[in-house]
Length: 105
Image (spheres, rainbow, N blue to C red):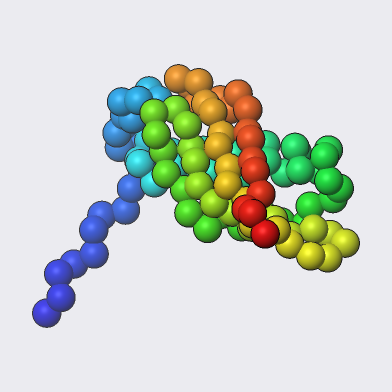
């Protein structure tokens, strides 16, 4: 028979991220950072290019306190674009800034 599934991660498990100093499971921390990054990117994109329908993160990885990856932005008026992003966080996991650049067409 197949092995049993791994145990579910819980923030109460007290796993500490050594780079950011956050407490919680690795997946919980990463999800929180991705959510904050998407919110910051959406704010920048709306201010610079108009209403955003949604942002779909294709991939992301954490390098120190920087979350980087690729995403696709979908505009409310139609159309979409692919971009690279970087979001910077402090030791408590608060976002400092989010930057992006579009792929070359």
